Image 1 (spheres, rainbow, N blue to C red):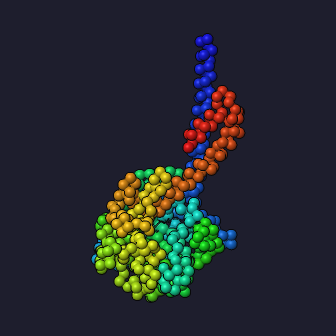
Image 2 (tube, helix red, strand yellow):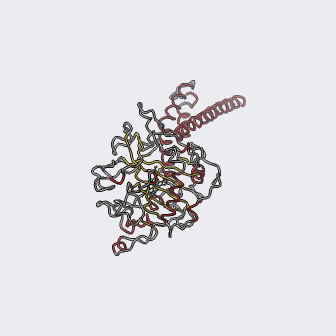
Image 3 (tube, rainbow, N blue to C red):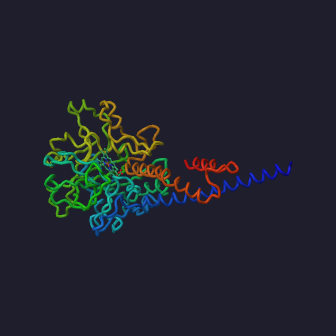
Length: 448
Ligand code: HEC
């Protein structure tokens, strides 16, 4: 009796040990495969491959983020300028810093001879993801008349963003593992510059101030409605350059600025024709529609006084940003730079991030929730985690989460099931020794 129950115990322990061993092996293999697949997406240069008959240079993401906040001991010359009293001088300093070494290599920043610039990973897995030639992602398109009175059709806009070393250091802290982003948010050090170049499909005839603008060929979508349906390379023109500068002197920790390409500038170098259009260091939380109608204007935005004369405010657009706050021509005039960027957050358990723009049915009071002055680490929602105004970090984690979910659902479990059935001596549905079916359930539960 004793010996028989003893042997049963031994047999059971042995079988259980084998199952644990198999599951542990599976988990190891699962983790390695998952990590390899995630790494592939992390480095994936574009959503669509370069067109077959294109043989020019292609986009290469630069993702070898620095391990310290200011590796080159750089000085940041704009930090000596008061952006409130000298906004244009501040913006020109930042503009020159952003163009230095980058114009020479046409923003293939891995070839910049002067300083390091980086990209954000995980920007290629979505249908709106990077195109292959310059790494641009699809932005909001501009409806007829939004860019100029002579613009008769909706046009697509595409953009590519870069981070200088301090910025890339913070990006690298979130993405130190390509297969697992940090979940506790981000904080950017002072000196950070986030830069975005925006190119439009609009022609010089449609938007006259674009005459002579730098042209990039890009394999973008055939129509604005179907982002993933990419066509052969077409010409796109530089319209807008956005910057966000981490600057402790601003209550929100950031200064946002935008430039628009303008043909009236007499510089011989096309990139130098980028005109400072506005600068913002806060959301003007008290500026309501009623106060605006009574004549109040933002006091935390500087607008170039020549906006109308420059043709930046066509008839179908009341202002660039909400009630005169900062924005560029390609942006939504119901929002503004700091407002939309204040929503940057780690996605919640349903992979949701706060919406960027107040809902259309929001009352004036409700809309003001989007125009609060949040400190750099203050999340938009109390329960959330702030990504410190970086919307590309928000997007990258969201894209990763979406990819991970479908990877686990479609690929891994299917493949594991096949592997299990092939490798295991008994079929999954057989009830030998009470294993089989239950083991599969266990593994499925383990993965879910
Ligand atoms: C309605 C929302 C919205 C508004 C308004 C807006 N942005 Fe952005 N911005 C975005 C989104 C979304 C991204 C990330 C795009 C992507 O997925 O590549 C972004 C990216 C950027 C980046 C690249 C760094 C980053 O955050 O990822 C900069 C710099 C930037 N914007 C500056 C500005 C400036 C300056 C303005 C105002 C002139 C502005 N933005 C207005 C939504 C907005």
